[in-house]
Amino acid sequence: MSLSQARWLQDLQRLLAIRSQFVISGSIRDSFLTPVGKTQALVPLARALWEALRQRDFRFLLIFDPADGLRVYPDEPVAKELACRLFDLKLCDGYQMMSLESLAKLMKRVSAERDARCALILDFASRLTRHSEQLSEAEHRFFVAAEKLSLYAAPVVPRETGGQPLFNPVCWLVNRAQDLPSWLTLDSEKIASLVIARPDYETRHAAATQLAPLFAGYNEASPATREQFLKSFTEGTEGMSLTALSDITELADRQQLGIRMIDDAVRCYKVGALDNPWRKDYLREKIRNAHQFIEDRVKGQHPAVVKTLDILKRSVMGLTGAQARSGGSRPRGVLFFAGPTGVGKTELAKTLTQLVFGDERAYLRFDMSEFAEEHSSARLLGAPPGYVGFDAGGELTNAVRQKPFSVVLFDEIEKAHPRILDKFLQILEDGRLTDGRGDTAYFSETILVFTSNLGIFVEDQHGQRRQNVQPGETYDAVESKVRDAIANYFKFKLSRPELLNRIGDNIVVFDFINPEVAASIFDGMLRNVARRLFEECKIQLSMPAMVRQELLSRCTKDLSHGGRGIGNQLESCFINPLSRAMFEQDLEGKQKLIVTGIQENDKVISLQIQSA
Image (cartoon, rainbow, N blue to C red; front, side, top):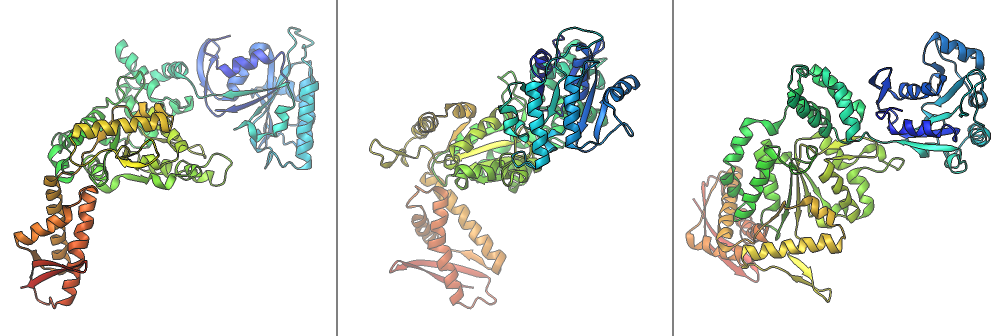
């Protein structure tokens, strides 16, 4: 038996002496690296099954599917003549339609045939019934006959050749084992279940070696270049089928991608785009000069900005996960933004999107507070097969397939249900996620950003919520406390330290807004108000320094809510009374509005304004 033969084929050959039927599920539509003569080839399941069984002196296979009926494999005169003679077949253009009753009789005759070893393959067996647990009378009789045959069939020795007693097997090819009535396999020890798994590293490497000569430049390449090509091809296709490897090879040929561009060929197959924004020269230049651009938008967070840029530079250089044996399929970058509310976590995610993709609206945002219940995972990730809505996919998987090059923001990640967090393990480790309809979304070209307020408030030993970090503490103290709280949350409250390990040292802690930064944020917001006023009303806004200082004091007296709190106070203390005052005045023909004073009576703030 060849070592390169698929594991499920080895199991089938080993069990032929003791099992009369096989339910084969999993990746049944994949290709299989199979010995054919003195060479190996990637072949479909029927050919792989035939090459394995002919080693045991099988003469032919009978393959039935509900659409076309019965045919003989291989499609050769000798095999077809023998099969037709033994089973009285009346083939028309190579096929013969059959009812379930006739198929049950054929199944019985195949199992007892002693003039030639043969097997019956029931292809598309998942489609034999509409509902596997709600059978019609004819369907029920058919499966009962199959169950009875599995129990009473005996291994046979061919009259002509003799040899070891083996069953003439019936093989059911199904998408999932549950597509057949559950009692069929549960109540019969003679029916073996074989699951065809996705190919492992060694199998993909062997297939890549087989396909390598089809890539331009392979035959002329040096041994070291060939070895690097095989390594990249094998690692980049982790989790894929061998059929996918063949498709990548064909895609590379059509796009004229040689062995040195294997990463581009794999990425093009995964995300459907040959153009790679991450490799653009202009992106490196933008990131090289990005520090001031980011700090103009996210103020007072110098350590967070520096660490974020370091991770972004690592992503652009393709070194994310470089320490691991296989890291090419992981997301381009992972960032965990933690810290007080309103200090710029979401704004930094938008700024990264603007920097990399030229449009801050290109990011995909998911508010994880909407996914606090376990059942909401179906909405985010897609319902499991067979459940209502499974064919619609999930919001996350659909969005990433549509925009494979993007920043994906998961806001307030700690509010998601723990079962949903488990799915992030697969995304962070393998860079892919498959929804209920079997479509795979690849995250290998995304930057994942998680935001969280973990560590700002904690519960004491009495279960009371208290503030863990305070404005005015040093950044080192804030960072240490927040990191410890995040570690405790994942390790002890969720009991998922593995998720924390996948995030690694990509935790970026934001500091509180200090008074100097608050004044800068206030000035920026005030300029935005003045610009909007001019755009809407063609009126310039002005105020003396004394009025601006009083307004600043009102808006920044409580910095616990960060920049968002400053904006809320500016709206209450200035924008609302400004709108009221403008309504009360005739501004027709006026070009300038001067705020000369601020008053508060009975908790109602009013502005004194002059127009010119």
